[in-house]
Length: 483
Image (tube, rainbow, N blue to C red; front, side):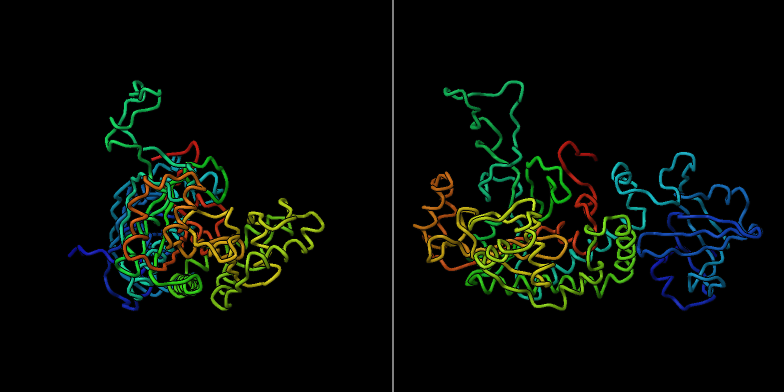
């Protein structure tokens, strides 16, 4: 009697029910033949390891075996037994195989050999079938779950903030416009500008760069909230660290000062790293080996001092060093790389905007632990950050990690109405356009703080991938919007 219920390969590999009849389905990674017996490596995405299927031509017709090639999808019924060979604990002796989907070996691009990441980006619709991307997407899911669990366990509420917005939270202006106007026949005002009153929303609108401002509104009623949603930057940056579409986690907390926000950020990151180490062992071990193999092809000075697993343990084991921006500038200005002009961006004066090379030096060379920088010059930070009493700095903080630099940015928010209006005007933001935001400073204002974690930056750190385009299923970058 045929079995109707499929068992996932992850469960089969952990099973000890030897002699039981099972049904497995998946995609063929490899097929090899030895002494007239076919050995098929089957994977269904539930785990990085393959299930070995042993197919005897006396049981499985030759015409069926001939159709089983790398990339084909098959359904296998058979007996689960202890493996006679090395490399796996169990295997399946096939009693019947059905080919669900063919894959022409002359055309299927993922043959059993090492493919470059650049090549795999060109076939992003197929790359989830590789070990590397299967591992990345399973870790990505685990991290999504861990984010929600961390905040839920601490009484935070998840808030959905708008994707289409009329505000620019960063004040940078690098936004994607949303419109239904006919670009071939745009309505114009008397001044010759585009008349957005005729647009769908009756005003100029864009894709959000951050849910922070709307998140603040919710925090000023619900105390602790977090957002986890897509954000968009129309920044023409073709780098390994930038995407035009990415996901952001942004908690906002009423009654938190900057120190309490730093405490939460440190707890959050340690929780995520420990969750990955505990729950993604197989995938991380594979990614660790993959990263070590890649390191061998780099110049000595470009190699990481720590392996991927060592970097993760490094974060889990070390308290984060808290350093003021002013102290960090002194350290950098007097450092060997700065004095010997090894930095691409030399540090010569207070007020410089720190680059990734500076952040990594502080973490990897100087303190040898994760670092939280705080109290930045107000000129290089956003309008909503609380001004300190020195009137030169704001209560901002960045968390810096090995191998990646800044991973979290946040601040205590400016809760004082007059100070906030003053900052808005300095950034050429019209207060009347932000009345909804300013109202929270008029009606029951309160000290509050928050931060943002770019989810793909986190994924780069957790997986050890060098290019941010490889930790999101469908990367959006300048000139690239496939699928």
